[in-house]
Length: 129
Length: 502
Image (cartoon, rainbow over all chains, first blue to last red; front, top):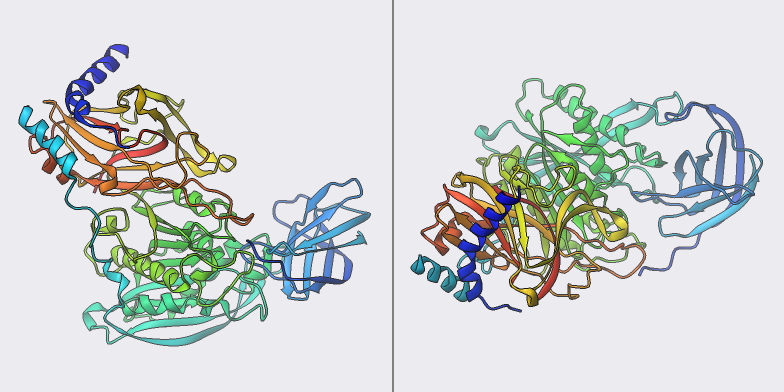
């Protein structure tokens, strides 16, 4: 390998060297829109979901907004009392005033629901799952 | 030897002929020869695979379309194009997003394509999961229904299908290609700022990607990753300085990303120029072989007077000298299994370009070269098979970037190098990259919505110009490719995909 490498370099410099030596060196983002929260409703469900062994068992309906989505969002997260934040398994934007989110299976008790529009406008409220 | 060397030196001093100035735009920048007709269509209710649970997702299957008026009988049936829009779920929420690319549909139809845009808004109600496979299903349902309507293939040529999509619709057309249950003859996929939720890898279809540097929505580099994972056929990518995400629509404005730095009309011009050209080349009426116009070269630049567009291009039939993909990484060996060597470089190594924290979004590896001409003339050499015949090819091609954050690059300044070919008789011909392309300073934009990105750019140097620089050079008897970093005093670049291409 070293022999070949040396040959290549030698060949390169043999071929390139003369003219190399002859060459000189030359040198907002806008303010998020306001959104609000009017109601969070929780329903018990039994819903299969690809990627989950357990069924989704709670459906959270959030009224408020206006909500909107782009390639992303709105993002919905469930914050547990210990501060752990869980991303919703499913988020469906029904209209600008209503969205439905399913927490990961088995989440229970008091949670803070956070909804964030793509422009980072945020609402949050507490509910019981 | 002296005379050819003098010619080389002379050519380097006086500069090369054939630089980009004064070249006409790509032909498809102009409106095509046909008047355009339009119609709205509605095939009624349709059920798609459930996104969640077991109940099918019920949608209304409707959209709009454009067709060329007066297309000669010899041109019928026409290539069939499906457009899939992006997601902008805002009041009235459903029913309108398919109308947001009329500028593109009209232009495509004027060039002889039949184009239908399918509404995906109900699928778009899913924020997460992104329901990308359902988009693919709806695209296939659209192809099926129009095929059913044209049993004798009088109008729509279903052997020449092209798919075009924006944002989630961009990933949707990739999904339609990847999951193609009836083996539809999809020969071209073009995307504008596609998402990449499903991380599809796809092979065997011509691919074009467009992406704006000021995209404040799909701002995570996904479109670059989609481009990198397309394999097997010609592919091209255009990184458009100052373009945002939603100005590729007729009128949608997303306050979170603000305005583009080029006008909405320029977004439209760029999209219709490149996509129309791409589709003519892949499913249209043009003779094949000029796909490379979508890459850098004398026939490309400028498309418009004031937009800087940085292309990437891959020729599947090229002769790859070094793509830096061999594992374990070894900067002393190239893809041919032969030797590479550096001289007077501060650093020569290979490393990943898949590191967003370091502003890299390419899932690939590349050569890293750092240089300071105070040490001497920095040189990097790739060994070829002795007597390599490059004469079947048209270009010496490579992808290069300046990485943000390097202490050796100067903000706002381009980098440059010379590329040299050496034949078995030690004849040397060199060209300066900046006569044909550039190594731009990475464009960045202030604000959290715009993560910094260092993006590769392809430059192609015509092999004929190497011969013009030194007529003694034997293209059919090559020995070495060399990169000479002597056009700036110091610098750091990443280099990938050194190849002979058409």
